[in-house]
Length: 184
Image (cartoon, one colour):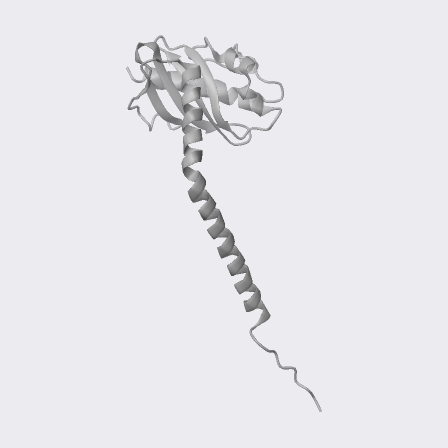
């Protein structure tokens, strides 16, 4: 005589899928709740970080006024702001060696870089991340259109083992100057 084994309840695959769905739903709910509590604080921290970057690259007692620019001609430029007679602050997001870099460049009214500040980046710690160090950022100050790293015949010293990141910053500085020149 042959015995048939009856399965009780639901199919094990369906049961596992429902358990996985429940765990995912609970986790998503908790993450959404935490995001709801922290979103305003994160946005405020980002605003303060950006404000500090603007003040570091081109201090302005009268503040910064956003200026319209040709976004199609300058796709990496996020925002261009006037700092009165002193010049402009240009915020850009561009590709580095490991991901996007968001930086602010101060450009004087005679189209010279007055300062550079990295707002956010995904560069490798100890290598490309050195674009945030004062020595490198100061090497960009005083540069004008056509700046390049020394490896490309320019005067900006590239960071050792981080030429791509250094080159990206120099190119972004050139874009900032060009965007300001295009204002007229």
